[in-house]
Amino acid sequence: MPKKKREKKVSEEEAKLLEELKRLMREGRRAYGGKNLKEAKKLFSKGQELTHEKGWKEDAAVFKGSILIADKKYNEAINLLTPLLEKETLHLKGHAYDRIGLALSKLGLYDKAIAYYRKALKEPSYDTPGYAWNNMGLAYKNKGDYDKAIECFQKALDTPSYDTPGDAWNNMGLAYNNKGDYDKAIEFHRKALNTTNYDTPGNAWNNMGLAYKNKGDYDKALEYYRKALDTPDYGTPGYTWYNMGLAYMYKGEFDEALEWLKKARVWYEENEPEGVEGTDVFIRGVQLRMRLQKSGLTDADEEAQKIAKLRGDLKPDDPLNRILDVYEKNTNIVSDYADKPGSDHRDVLAILKGWSSSIPIVSSVERHDGRNPAYLHNRLLY
Image (tube, rainbow, N blue to C red; front, side, top):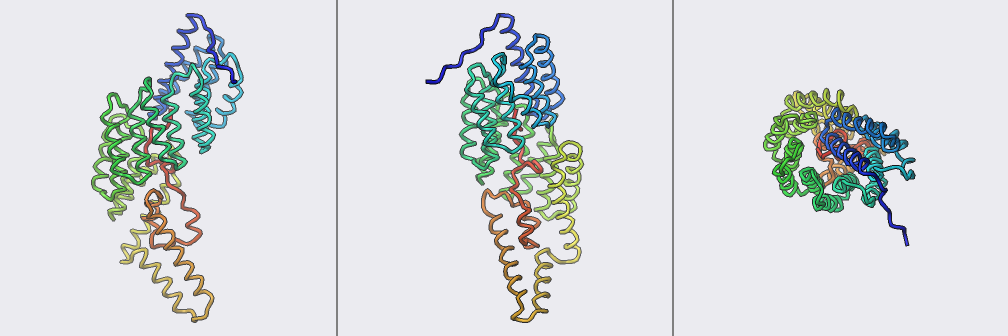
């Protein structure tokens, strides 16, 4: 029979300090989730200072690990925090597990992250179980297990001490968006916006716009994207500029699309360099469409002309005919697959569909889940 974990005995003075450390950790995590990295690091640094003064070096390392995560040094954070888990003198063990889970999530190691969130939940002194359930839900969402994600978000909402329910409602909306249930997604984003003290309404407006875009209502999508941009202290306008570029691209207004995508690219370059490459794909695609439009051809027309001309130069028994057959078949396979609900290839197909969707291009089209660039705006973990 496993031994029941016991909470460490602390003096009244230490108990007060521990409550202050937990407050700093909670508020730092909320600031991090809202993309206010400067404030998050300030709070984590204060926690690190207090623990150093007390001589709690293991707990100081938990705050240091949180700063490393804010600086996107995920492997360094994992290497710092993992050895602490065996230390009996560690007071913030649940948070150490949670921090490791967050770093693993950021590295895309979702199964490992989920395991660490579950370990955090088993710690008797862990004071933010709602955060762990929310983060676990995001890990499941990023894995593609949307029903499990929704279950975790609901558990966060069912946690009495959970103080950011708007985040869970918003993230639940994202899970329904990924499932292709856009009306349900809109419903939950509205619940987030109607939540008292929801501190990142721009996120929900952005995501509601995304749901309308996926429904094919691009004008409505643009309306909600503008609401996101009008939100005071909205932390990630680049996400929304990018989304506006896609909406205008779908509307066939390529000049507007290019303007917003280029604006988004500048933002990504300055704030999230990992999003630049994905944005460039769409900038090049829009520029291609603009050139074809000026020439009076659609991209599909041009491709069809290329194949027709090539076939016209071949003899009936030429083996190249077979290659062209395979080529055209693969073009249709990509298009058919990308049109399936939940495939998340729709934006890429706005450029590729009917145009050069050969096997090499298929292999480069990755599942677009909002991380490169991040047009799906979840509360990005705490």
